[in-house]
Amino acid sequence: MSIVNYAAREITCKIVYYGPGRSGKTTNLHYIYGQVPAERRGQMVSLATQTDRTLFFDFLPLDLGTISGFTTRFQLYTVPGQVYYATTRNLVLQGADGVVFVADSQRRQLAENIESLQDLHANLASQGVDARTVPLVLQYNKQDLPREMIMDASELDDELNFRGVPAHVGDALHGRGVFETLRGISELVLRKLTATADAGAGR
Amino acid sequence: MKAAVDAWVEEPLLRFVRDARVRLALVLEASGRVLAQHGFTRSVDVMSACALAAAIQASSAELGRQLDGAPFGSLHHDGSDRQLFLGAITTPGGLHLLLAVFDDATSIGLVRLYFGELRGRLAAAAPARVASDAVTPALDEHFERDLDLNLARLFGRL
Image (tube, rainbow over the protein chains, first blue to last red):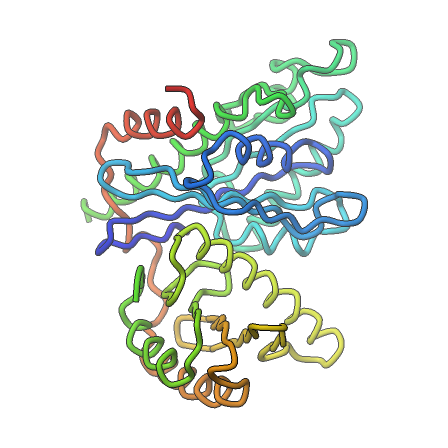
């Protein structure tokens, strides 16, 4: 849930990058960290294992500046993708205002993508959250790999995007699609805030 | 005190900081959302500290449950120059956390003593949990323009 400080006109939103292990969630955050000036971001915190897999989460606070008169800050998190970190995944997901699902476009990873997407829905349900109401953006990562190894966007749409949410092709290692994905989820999260406020005002 | 999000936390935290003589203090929700802070100069540092404090609390609570049958209530780390105290506070609004950093101007005993008082004051002052849609801002309908501009600046695309 977003934090809104009316007195200071500040909004803080939590965005969680979700997806199977090695799909590129941490790479997305590393790219953002490298692009954004130091004064507009905090330190990137990575709690990783000795084999460099995310153990607990990665965390990157971003200052987006002023939007409609509100100083807007985003907290970007990743979850550990490996199946055995289910508890920490559920914990990091708590209170998320929006989710970026980073799918691995490799054909042989399709089952892992589907399993992770099901895991996302199960975790949201366990927290009493209707998954259909959570702003969600898909990123089809690793589209730089040879064509014969990967599924294209329309194939991945057919398999993963049953909600018809915005989807972006990506190559997070080189930055392709990272900005567009962040822009997409930012818009959905802020639009939901506005819609909720309008509904509240109409009561 | 800067950037206190919830007014009901402000006075009790200020009093705790003054009495216990800690350098940095944060009151946050168990999910990592900040309620009030003292001593931090950058908001992004506050967010990092909150995220890590929430993670420590979640890990240690689970460790406590597995080893001791119940979550640990507080943690203390004795560093070379500065020490860290993390304590859980149950209020009508849910579980909250205090993160305090202090040096030789005080002691862990005093911090624990005044943490007990803070816990009581916050439990008495905390409102019950409110519905999430009761506190939402009305952004301008053209907020996308600001969003695009700010993101482009952030990524050096202007």
